[in-house]
Image 1 (cartoon, rainbow, N blue to C red):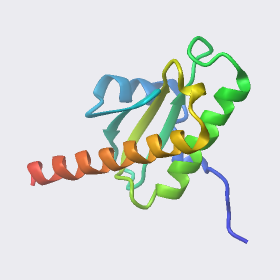
Image 2: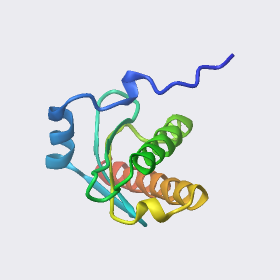
Image 3: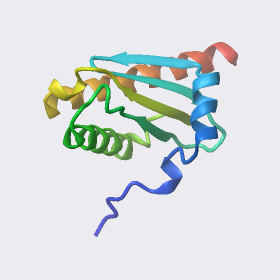
Image 4: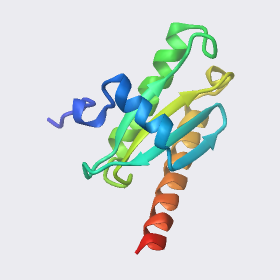
Length: 125
């Protein structure tokens, strides 16, 4: 049976790691109802942090659904994503998106992030 969890090594764990991403974000990717900030890391795999405020997403069930869908997307795409620390922020109105639309938005953000990281590495080499 395959392991379906979201391991600690794929998470941003403390305030300092989040602060580093906010202060040193190299990539900024927008989607409808969400935004991702990212900065390169030296770990060889992506790490994810989520920020979903009660102010923007009122109901706990909606906040949990958003976090679950983003985590699942990262877990499935981790082989394709560049080695970056990512913070995904939920914006007002994200709870109005259905699962299919939200999944497409997240997948599109990962493609743009992958493209931006690839272009940045081509420029530096």
